[in-house]
Structures are given as C-alpha cells and as structure tokens.
Amino acid sequence: MLTARLYAGMTPLTAVDIADAILGAVTRPAHVNIDEIIIEPRNQARVGKAFRPP
Image (cartoon, rainbow, N blue to C red; front, side, top):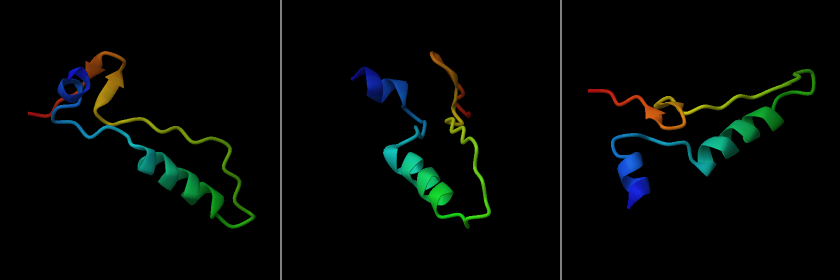
C-alpha cells in the first residue's frame, strides 16, 4: 500500500493529536486568548519531502 510505504518509519499526525490541541485550547482560563494554532508533523518538511532520521 502506498500510504504504508509513505509513512514507513515516521509518526504521522493523527486525529488524536488534533483533538488534544483543540482540547488544550478550549480548556484554558477565560483570560487566555488563543488566536492561532499551527500544527505540523515533525517528519514532513512539505508535500512529497520527508525527513527520515538515520
């Protein structure tokens, strides 16, 4: 499967990762304002280019 080969040796972002970030944002105290959250995988530099540690 192409996806299995694409992510071999990598830990891609999952729905749980995104949900955890959202939960963290919505459970901040009322005086905390979160304007933006940027979530990026650590292994993927851009589409089609991945960092694979030795």
